[in-house]
Length: 323
Ligand code: GH3
Ligand code: MG
Ligand code: MG
Ligand code: MG
Image (cartoon, rainbow, N blue to C red; front, side, top):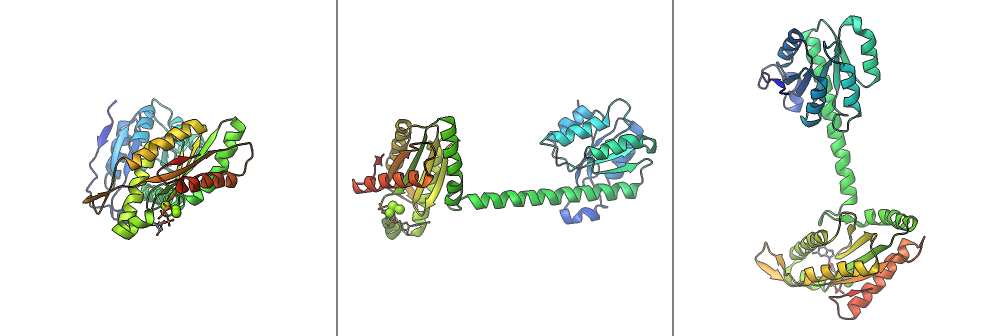
């Protein structure tokens, strides 16, 4: 099942046109006629790294695994249906965004039209002209990289909008928008939902005694310990300065109480490193815990109840869980 690798173009001098992206692309050429793929691969190798795979099924596998910038698919294969590969590549998550450049004989125009319908991005007719081949490959690769870049940017800004920069936990805005959904799901599924507010005890004095950076260290380490003690479906967010909220779907008061108590102990039981690990200080937290009480209860009311419980935990002497 070995891929025929013709990696002769890596450092070719003639790759100026893709210079804005730093280097040529990685191309998977799907063609099973030796005379054809040898010529195409040699031409493409002037700017790109080219792998040749004659079998479309194998090609799909390589395309999904191999991080290619472009698929060049011959629609006039001897033994296989190149069109099928194109349509499969379009429907697979891993290959959906990889551009496809089809190659066809002029008498194969019906297949070519079909290819364009199912998402082939561009085509070339045989006999292949070198300049045209390179120009079209370049265009597709550049477009791919640009849309990848846009997608990354969108992804990043979404993540930034819902994440607290200091701790990497979700931020308050995200929690507030998501909590209503979680509460609704719990109500319709008839499942419990637990919510706790956690507040670091005497945090102001940590800042006052050791500096704001030490306070930040504590917040970061606190988030690490929170993450360790919750499940993937739980939602943890930094609600305010040194206040955090954890929402636990499908969790009743009894179980949530155990989670809260375990978390409280994991904070109080292990001093926090500050000043680049040169000093360790004791930290405790207080936790107010509650559950969604009835269908359609406003999440603001749930939060308020947790906050009242937190207030009592503080009032009763801190370093404790109150529900
Ligand atoms: P209590 O036990 O009643 O909760 O006392 P506390 O000192 O923790 O409560 P208070 O709410 O008075 O103080 C919270 C402090 O947290 C005040 C604020 O300066 C500090 N703080 C808020 N955000 C940050 C942050 O991002 N970094 C640091 N280092 N401190 C912060
Ligand atoms: Mg406070
Ligand atoms: Mg506090
Ligand atoms: Mg506070």
